[in-house]
Image (tube, rainbow, N blue to C red):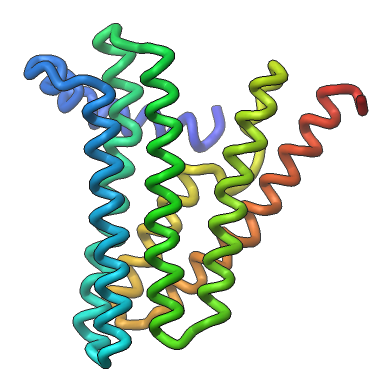
Amino acid sequence: MNYRDFLQKVIYRIINPVIKFMIKIGLTPNAVTTIGFLLNVVAAGMFAKAAMEWAAGSTEEASCLVGWAGGIILFAGLFDMMDGRLARMSNKSSVFGALWDSTLDRYSELVTLAGIALLFIEADWFWMGITTFAAIIGSVMVSYVRARAEGLHIECKVGLMQRPERVVVTALTAIISGATGNLWWLAGGMILIAILANITAFWRILHCYKQLGGK
């Protein structure tokens, strides 16, 4: 069992009572997916607000917003796990639900990273804005290669920087940056994602090449 499977089992044990409560009140998996997305939109808005505060010279207020945005991203990540678990436990899995989940996952990640890119640009950190844009590209391509591979009937979950890792890195570095008032932590997170996400995308391409026998 790899570390991701182990952590998933631990988290499922924690959230199962919450899932049972959701089933009891009639909350649907698609509704949970939507709530998680809206939370990420709120986080992106907080990054945008932090960018304006930073540009106005209110760095303390901006740091506070960055930290809270990181906390919201981490909280939203729980909803990202609960929607699939809820679908299975309530026997409400559907093809559209899978499509809805994947689509809002992409939107969630893109809006939060866009908010971070804006923050760096307004903080007069242009190259970190570009680095965050590279992280966006890597994140999109990791998901795209997997989707394209699955369309060719190839299982493609290899790589170091999949979505759960990207969410955790983004959230934790934002929280630490907010607590310390130092954007270098968030910058480090974006550099890590920019490098490893793009490596993961090409890793998956190589994996597919091998699976296809070099065709």
